Image (cartoon, rainbow, N blue to C red; front, side, top):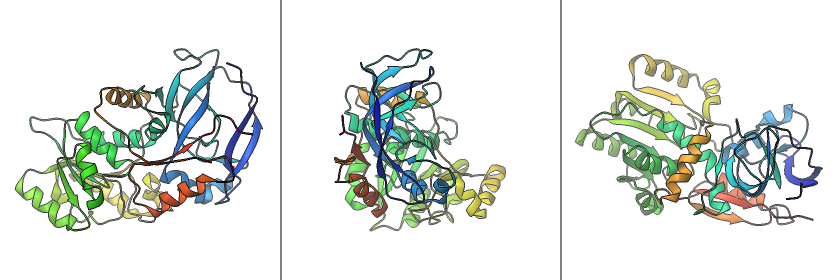
Length: 353
């Protein structure tokens, strides 16, 4: 396979500036890296939040957007073992203030960047919807207390979203948990089909009252995963969870989808720090978390997909990433409007001129 000469990518020069198509020469491949032709890339809230944050303005040069990808290896560094030209792969590339995956070609370090072979049962668009949300879902489920004789019980708030749908599926397929999912009536059947044992419709039911009733009629919950953010469930989670259980949020107390969430909110919300300390000492535990960058998690999901035990959900595949259609604008708008089921994916052109 001929080594490419030119790469086209969507980049932004600074704070909130529109993405522009840039053209650069493809440099020689370092010995420890793979060069991958990207076929599809998905967008996540953090992509937009970093783009709009002041962080991108403090580093010179073009910054890319996109963290997830699926593509084909076109070149292998001399020191890389276990990978070959032509391998179809999917993975996660996190260069917060550097290149993104809305690009024809990307450089990946397989010893540190999460990467796995793409399952044959998935398209590139489906595979590109997986990495960040799956790595985040596993990080959430790592907070489950040790297994006992009884089945562990998990609550998932925001169960139809990108991360939430994977917490539901993995809690069932990988951890054999009982899952109570919170979503809208529009997505209730979708979440049930993912494997949820019970569904609470937040549009017609009071979440706090319903969860407390479920707790009183059964046993305490082991884990509450909040993929929405805010403080709605903060007053009641100590009553829902046993002392070894955990309330885990991937967002934090903030509710503005345009601002950065995750562990950085510990700096903006001192109450979260106090909750963490209190939970560490007395329980139940509290944490605002990010993802686990482990290739083994992507490999496990690939195996589960091959066996038909998990599925992807792509709400929309957008064409025209690099032309005058500027489909990245629609991707951003859909994400900021909220209520996305699963993921939004951009198809990256096979060739551009």
